[in-house]
Length: 87
Image (cartoon, rainbow, N blue to C red):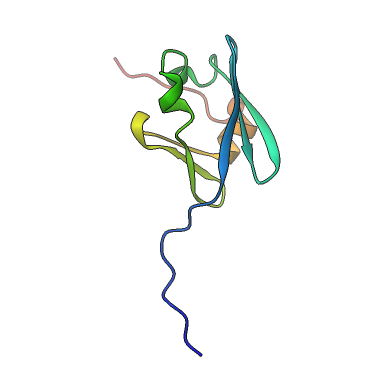
């Protein structure tokens, strides 16, 4: 018996709600809140681009149209990953 070589692992992830305060994503049966304060890139993004998200590998989310990739760890604990901007 032979099996094909594995390709890119893309799992189900879903944006379940978008509000004036942030977005909720459902990953592997757990829902996580992402506030605009901690994830400002989503605040002005069109809904169609926010909902277009995939889990490329375990714990790694990617919004292709927004060019945003985030680890699930940074979503769970944004205080561990402060935003740093260089002018």
